[in-house]
Length: 105
Length: 518
Image (tube, rainbow over all chains, first blue to last red; front, top):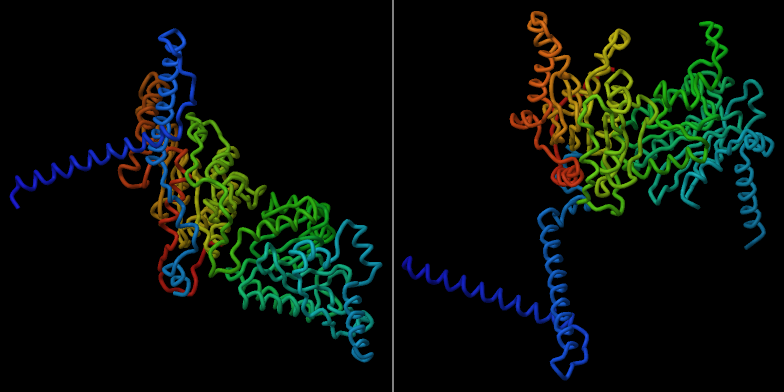
């Protein structure tokens, strides 16, 4: 395979992965939106002051939700960086044959 | 059931009732009056409910001199058997003071020897509950021979199964050597005493006047002589300490220490550790705080707590794994190494190595104690025990230098080259031949004599020296420590290192045995 073809192949693969990830994120957002949808509120009939207040509070709620998700993701990332989730796992089972054999040497 | 069968059962029940009475109700009452329990009551308190199985309860002595033919009690002066502590098997013997003062007879010795043999064959710990006036004089050399058998077995069992002596009454003369040979001695305050010769003999021979408590009580043996590893306020507390201690110990030398269920996060990092060590090297801090934050919460069980308190030794757990902790204590004499602390550390290392405890050392010591008393007392011989014990140990060995690691003390306290598997240093670590002040006095003595302002010049030299040695980076750059870690990282780093070393195997050169400088 020529270098050009290989490069193209990798580029296409990269684009596919990127779009697939984006699609996945969109899906997650839709699911989250469904799970945490704002309570129904009365829709004002006219373009009066009440409708404007509703729009502002709606934007604020979305902002808060986004901030909450961001904090959760940041916390999860931090935990992944600093904590070995398997730390101490090997101490939970008794020493293996390598140790046992040395006892009878 | 036929009448004949019923009478046989009745006879057995009557015999059992007689055995349970030991030396009789009168003597049991006398024992209670002294605030002491009987041998059987103690055993029942020590072991899990309904787990005790007595053996040799009918065995009586066969001597008739000095009217002994009229003083025969089934089981003689000791109750032996086996049972469970926290569902783990132990062998136990309890001297029965209600039978001829718990005196050590030929049969007494044979019964104890038998339970020790069973313990060694089965690989289970042995616990002796001591309360005896000593050798049974009426039996003469038979009693002494029985003692010899016991001491020989104590020695054979050493390093094979854990042996614990709980002192709940008098223990004098030759009989003290049995507890002296065991791994742990627990004494009850007020009721237990240990000595080779009593106050009267001492006064006759040396004209020294001393009372029973000051000579061989729990307080003196747990803080001055180091004979006792634990001092308990009461019999009940002594037995509770025994139960707790057994919880840390493996049943024999072929088993790892028992694990317990996990209640503490292995990744826990206490930020307070980062500020525990003062930046001023002359300022003290409590190493117990570091131990509490590094190991599983509440798991540290100090051994020899009141003896040589300039070092702490004891058992703890890391992610549920039993470990031996050895730590200098900067709060007491700056954590200096002296004769007593050398003995304390070396003995604990040897026990830990024999019973598969990984050894974790926390180091902050300015060196060995200077002084004529120490030198004439043999600090060279005693200090050598530490380096011998560390070098000989083949279990996983980890060290954390928290601050000072100077000179010979750096070498003996689990340094890398006596085969410590991993040496960590906190940023506060100072690894040098000696402290800055002393080193400058030696290195620049001539220059300091010739200058007009020696104090100012000396201060400059001190700063220069400290720059080089008061931080661990130069030691790490030359491989003398494996890593420099933030104090708060100590716990996860030790756990990770223990994981690596879980199956550690080391081969030693063939020999009959080494020759530790005793």
